[in-house]
Length: 420
Image (spheres, rainbow, N blue to C red):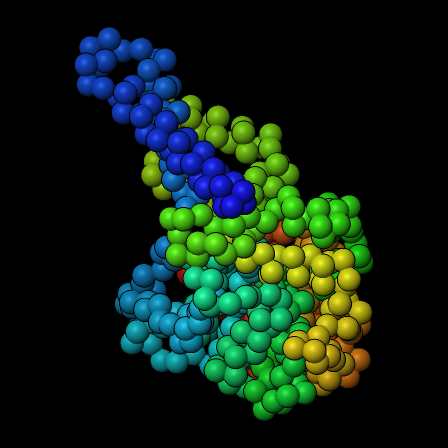
């Protein structure tokens, strides 16, 4: 009960700040005050507007915002987001461009379950939809999943990926971004032994912690500094009464967001101060750079407690993937069984979350895969987000990934097609 009260207290704090922002904006914008213009009132209203939007976004799942796509015929085609596989903890989505011929590249984009929604990969999806059939794993907010649906840990996550790959078939090319990279590698190895015909043609691992100890960072060191008991006591709470998942043990998204912000506290504080000044001067807009970034960054989701704790214990502390000792339902998943799936790793030179060396460690585990089917790329000057979104991804990494896909599938379209 104490943990449930703590969860509801966090939501009360968030809700109160949202209300304070809305109240401040409403009061300072009262029409009568326009008779006596006062910069303090303008600043007060701006503070209220920014504060209300900030705390409101924390509990909103962002929209994909991908509604149309201009094809080679010069016409705008509707993009229908279709659910291919529906499961309690996550769905498989397909971005189907209506009226367009099916593209030869079938890409499964595995989104991370690390506090943000799959929409964090919106820019990645937009860049790939140009000449690929894009499928995405859309993980659900744990607070909205009834306790009756059971647990969901790293083994369940792996089996979800196995099911998604089977559904898409052997002509699939998997791209795993950040957190799911080790589990995508494990899912591929699981299929290699259990159902070889369902294996994807290629697997691209982007900035994932295959071996967290290869190049330690603040993120990986945190897992070493605390015990599992301390972690459970500090981070795990029970979902409150107002949600469908009432009683479920979770790692709250609000706690994860607090951790994200604390890593670059001064920069975030300055960003919000600057935005308040822009709003007060009527220089901001609903879709300006600040709002585009923070509308996504602030939208967080809860993870099941068992998934969060098993990730820390088995991937970071015990390094089960790095040691090729990962098991699913008591059965060892041997990464060395992968003999046909081409594997490429992508890392960012300035990645401070999954530092260079952590992801490329996957290639050493692939003892049964010929060197001709292994590849790696280190992007100069790129940080963590830059290797799957932004200029580094669009201009450098995306063409290399598509070339790698084509080399292992026989796709006929050139990889350097223009990005819309």
